[in-house]
Length: 240
Image (cartoon, rainbow, N blue to C red; front, side, top):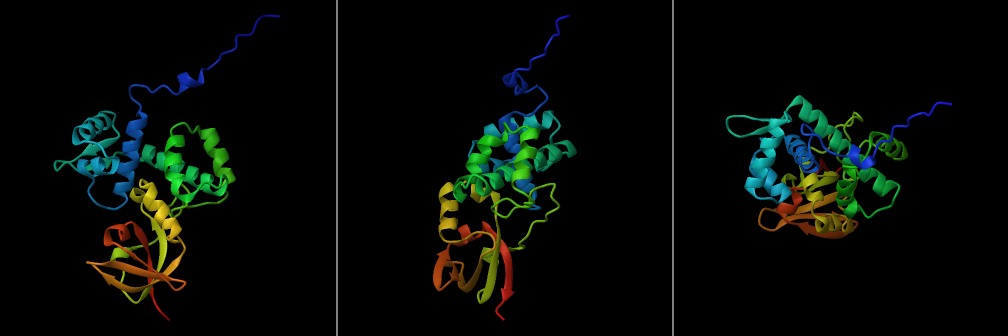
């Protein structure tokens, strides 16, 4: 019997990045650009530096690399936007991230405030086959645990009222926590400890630009600074 040559692929070799492919760090940039672009505001290098906590020269180098690879474009004012190819790649990254967060909380019972950090560690190594299996385990989930829609599920972003703009005397239903807040583990722990999670409803007895906004739930009051309140989006309704 003739010998049959068996081709073996080295898993480590499969993870090597080609010259025209984004590195893990560049994928992080694409993910942040995607998040910022969803706010319908111009994305500038300073936004990336602030979010990623890096120096402007580091951002300039990464942005140039992404531009050279055809993932982003910059207009005459320096505003950054994703190309069609960049958007497709960024959306895939975000989908993986949010599916992983759903899996970590629903299946692994991981504490809510640790989901983002762990998902960041895992998302770069997640194969399409494993992504499919993980998504099967989280059922028909359409949002991450923080209320943000999973791309590809048809879900829309819910919550059009930012908490710091909500009117006193109304009921506020929390729908989502913005992605930028997820970077702060202590802040996410604070949100969960005080039941500031999607789906919960609060009465707003008082609000002031100087002292913050007060939320009441089950006869318990909590006052948030306007800076923190900016991370929370939901819906307002009058008291019936």
